[in-house]
Image (cartoon, rainbow, N blue to C red):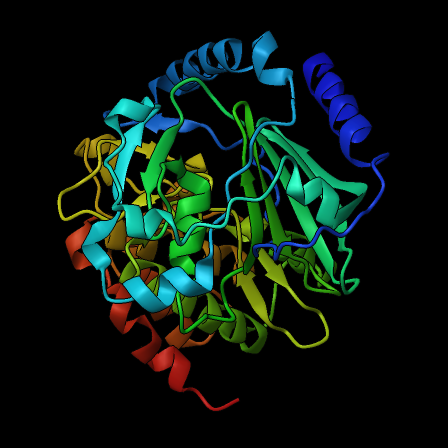
Length: 391
């Protein structure tokens, strides 16, 4: 907490007190991401080890993560990504994304000179010059999120500051000459044209030596889904839950089609506009690129972790996403996390709950099968009978 407080003061000193001056060059685009929360710890395949292994890993990471140099926020040379131009040129180039971890410049794949000339590299700290930073919206283990206002037109945004960890993964995206932090890259990939309103929009970003900054859209009014459910008495009626689930499933499918495995779809990472009931998926900090073969280490929130992670030591993107969506739906309509007894009945497809329709119970059961091969396919979720029910 002392280190977080120190980081907060450093950000406020550099950002909140800095005058808002509009520069001449055009700025980028990025969206609102609440920070990671304490329960978001990596889960190692093969078992939770009673949580002790994860706790030791978390302590080790924090010890190496919050080192002195990482807390410094110097005005480094920032890089800029012309999203619209890159999308037009590389829209069909699905296989051109490359991942590496903390790679030096010599290991970054070279980019043709003509492509490098397309880059518009602004001066130092262009986000601090283009946006007025306001009060803090939230914080997590990896940084802070602040209210922000774009100087040129007064647009209300969210500005996320994230400190780089020693082994943070980077990704090469088309139209950019160097590797960029994975979270930024995945958010850009998910924002490809045609843009999906169910996914938070990235407006601007800046990559510095010790930290990176993302400027994200800030829908207003809005609150995270967990707060929304609590406001409505800890659970939602089926009609409201159906409307929300339809949008979340669409967001998940779009991410997968664009090569993004979010890995942390949960209530806290979904924003709900109380006036329009529009839903937006946020925070790609636990995400990774889609791949054909399974993953061995789960990075996300433990209560949304599918059983195959501990049973088989390997999991796949689509069945895992379906499981997390099933947990999400269960918690929305039931108001609590499924017990072992619930999951046992669900696995036998004999689970019911008073007040819920048969179609809703069947929808939950089709998602929460312990055997991933028996779960409903992600692409077919929106075709389930529950979504055909007339309001």
